[in-house]
Image (cartoon, helix red, strand yellow):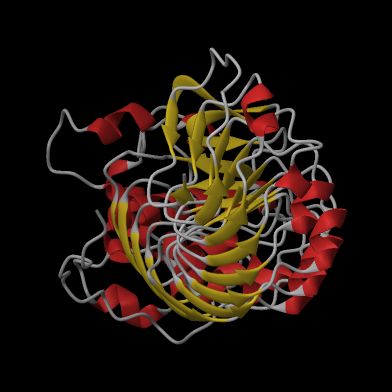
Length: 424
């Protein structure tokens, strides 16, 4: 169950200096490794943060200067002719900061060791041998790069990470996949993440993140998957109308997200999965939901949504799962008769009314129908029991009348609840 985020030590104060790449320093043969490294790294994080020798930035710098040396290590560039080396130095530093912010463990046999962070080998090989597959693409667990040696994915779900996401992450501008789900990250999504314009997957489900969902997400127009579920975000839902490539959006189980579903979300026409369950959302389901014609999965369970289902919902003809239980929806369900591919329909604990007969012409793929605790009336359609994929039928707590029919044999049905109606 979701609880309160853990009490954490105050994060090290960040410099107000904007993170940026800098012009390489002029070669000076007399400079020490520390002096050369600082000329590249100090402008990235700001000078003030290095005054705290226990900060993640200081520890990362110390590792680069005093530990990351010898055979196989990266040399600190000494002049403007070494642009690629300079990029790798900053990239290696950013990953080291990430390590000390969220990965570091004093235990040698830590789960984190599988990622090979802070190894002398190329940082593009700081990953485990296992692969992570999503959307027909394969990613290493840990860090992976493109052919140019730039980090394109950081995939570390369910890895015991604890800490805050460092602002230096914005320097990884080629990053396409950032999957830190199922850890113990806290704090907010840093504003510097707005510079990750190549990001396609941003997955932070199951952490302790707080604050409002940032508006800058709408500028990450290459996003295809965005999951912030099971955190502690608050405030209202941001406008995300520019996420034309987004296929999956999950903000469920934040408990304190409030306000309405933005009508502008209808412009996310590539969306296939939308989950906003277990929040404090209110208002109506906007008519613009019908513009999401690719929608397969709509989950709005456990909010305070009200009003009738918009007629435009019939445009979502590919919808398979419709989860609306525990809201305050009302009106009739006729629009569902235009959704022939429904498999899971959860409508319990609302104020729906009308009869079920109009829905029986289709629903051939129906596996679960739970419309319990509503105001449905009329007789029980015999056709329901001819749905050979139906496993769960729960209509208890309505106002259904008439004589219970002789049910046709349905060997797939596993659960049937019809009590608290007005059958004779």
